[in-house]
Image: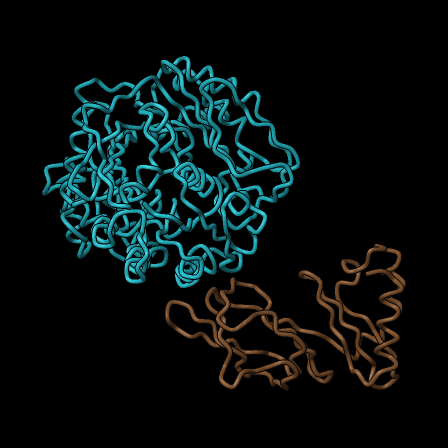
Length: 151
Length: 452
């Protein structure tokens, strides 16, 4: 992606009813999200990796980012090695979650171990599929943490 | 034969096992902690699974994560390597229950030999000489005193579940016996989870000689000769090993080998194992303990016998027959191994972690280096400080010593402190060169020498 393409994406989010848009390219991710208060779009994620232009461009882009103190993110990682299993019904994209809630289980040696989240917020991404093997530390969910929550 | 094996270990030994697997066309799964993500064993394996955070209990000792890693990758067998889970009977049992082949002896055999006191009893019953000691655990101070008066001082108090030179106390006289007994029990309880201790005669100026055995599932047992492991640091950790042992007569050598085979048969041992003996100044030997796994110093046996012990372990675990008889096994020439550790000899051998900025390894005829390090490798502070094993072979001991000296003078490791210089001092020591070594060699001939 080059700077023009990124700019047009930002414009698109700005001028649409979209709240946010997430792009994935390999294992890199870019999220452009509208600040609900000011209506401006902000880019998060591994911008450098997505850009052809490299570092100077990324520097400009970071300046575009809206006040970071209002939004924070939390990755839920696998605490065990095993098979990732969704709950029924599953905790899906956009689900509201609360501290202490079980998100999924990881099956290890025939035991389903619950994965519990320790923040309040909203699921903005799920990185694994049902019945997928996962290793320790692998990112399972990305959570947008409620601003009132202390992380 | 297996198609895929998981290696439940790290460092040079994981690399060693992966290499054997690759040559056998067996696919490999490395497991690693978060601290070892960039480690050599992870690079060399076909697949890798992160099994936890750096502390060993959270990763390399975490049985559910390791077994789960084998499950999700479809590995059929687990090689436990050295240390970590290699001698945990419950791990071998868990593997069996999960349908995974544990490359090592059965849980039952491990259980019996893990308790040093019951191991002694088993060996005594099988006719293998043991150091005179208490029969079973010491019940009370009275019993200890009775044994002490009968046997004479100095004596050793040993933790029934101790190992690696830990959990041993030396008692010089009757006055200090009750206090030492108390301390030994407390130590054993906190370090090994059991306060059980036993006592035995202290063999003075002993040499540590061990015999390698291989046993298949079809009742064939052979020994691959002995290794001399008397050069140990003050914590009884081996520093330099060689094969064959120095100063043994052919008769003593064959008696040792026979005793080791007898010991392995007595317990129905299967796979590779080592019987450790103490050899006193008269050449009499006593069973010390059995290592139910591969050993760090297995390489010197490989160099003189030409038998790849790791491949044999895998073949045996797959149910194959040994396929050769005792008389076909011959020790040819002499091999020496130096363990190169990340530690500071000037400061009590404390481990030295950090980034290795530069490495120059020795090479040439008759030289083997088993290592996982590379320039840029970060030595994590959580594990064993072993960086590399330099192993040399030559026609005789004299030639092997010269070759090892040549190798160590070529070797350079920058970024962490190592014991290379200390190893050079051992090799140039006149007593060592004459083969006059006992387990107190470092204390008597190297450290005392520095102080005077």
